[in-house]
Image (cartoon, rainbow, N blue to C red):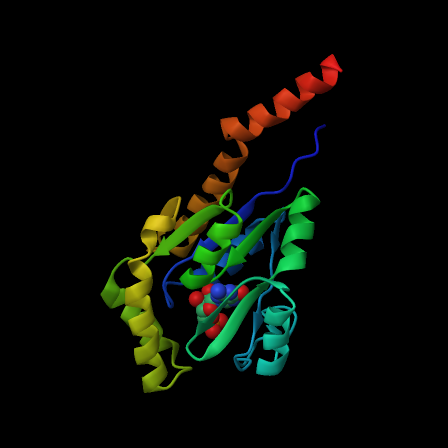
Length: 206
Ligand code: 5GP
């Protein structure tokens, strides 16, 4: 069997579109994917666990990680930092395992620069009205934060062009099934298979 690097999947899309829910549901079903747990400076929400949902950091700790180039990407979102640990992603891919990121769009664009071979999936809201309801109904944020998140969402939707796939999140299970199909299809891509076979033939010849 030929050693293959894992595939990097990036799920992104507007705030409130349901990325977190879709990702959690996907991970309940998919056991051959590795989720990259992000770093953040935002407050822990009730029910969240350090090292499971995020690694919670102070602003100083986060800025130190930026300085040390320990983040594959990072973004400031609603006055907090969010970032992806570089080493975890690179090591896991090198070990032949697929890595899954669930991040906002600024970060996804940075990943695209470093990992153009990544598979970029844009989770799309069924409608803007629906998106607004979800952000408002989450109820964990103040009015001002809700407005900020809505403004971000509008800007984020305009960034769809950079993505390989668009999945409309009108139903969580349907969205998860589509993402699973994307993952399967990517593993069947001719370029990936052809690369493996070429190497096999080269090894045979030598
Ligand atoms: P929340 O505060 O609701 O958990 O997340 C806010 C936004 O930050 C979401 O859109 C989420 O996908 C995004 N996010 C989570 N982790 C990361 C990360 O490591 N990098 C970036 N750029 N965004 C992230």
